[in-house]
Amino acid sequence: MHNLIKLELKRNKLTPYYIALAIITIVMTGFIYMIATIAKVENDLQFQNYENLLKIHTGITFIIFSVFSVVLFSKFVIEDYSQQRALLLFSYPVSRTKIFFAKILLIVNFITVGFLLSTLIPNSLFFLTEKIKPILNGNITTQIIEFQIIRIISYVLAIIAIGFISLRIGFINKSVSSTIVTAIILSVILGNVLVGLSPNIYTFIGVIVLFNIGIMFIISTIHLINKMEV
Image (cartoon, rainbow, N blue to C red; front, side, top):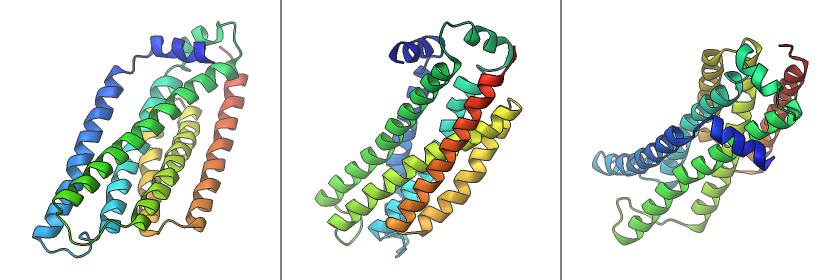
């Protein structure tokens, strides 16, 4: 599997996506400070609350990475399984399932690490500067940090699930646009739901259920790939 992932990296360079990831992290760092500053200047009590601030910051990052993930799925999967490229893939002396899993594993790892960096770095910097020279009133409690950790884990699973579902829908007609549109719709709907809920066992169970649905969509995609004729 490791060799297959290395092969994917040779065929599809990730440099533009690393640059995009760095830009997203910088932008989201600026975003959390911007919201906090505006809330203080405008005396907006809603976003002077650390919990609400983290909710909106993580929610926006969630939508961005939901779309980012399907861009990668489209590049590494949908485009590669078009008629001409599929001929090359199916010529490898490796099972189709293993090749597909290598692609999925590469994308999932990239998106997971990327989302963690784009949330934990801004959050950590913000928490640190709030301890030194706070913008908002109040205290950053252990509960706020625990809720944010649960929220981040839940969002990672939700992003992966949205990517799997969108990939399956886009794979039907090999359409990048339908893959991205599906991801946007799902991420906006689910993002609004998750932002409106507090992290708890029921929310986490709901995300786990969604993740399992995503797994079923991936299994269905594997069946399609194994039945493809070129």
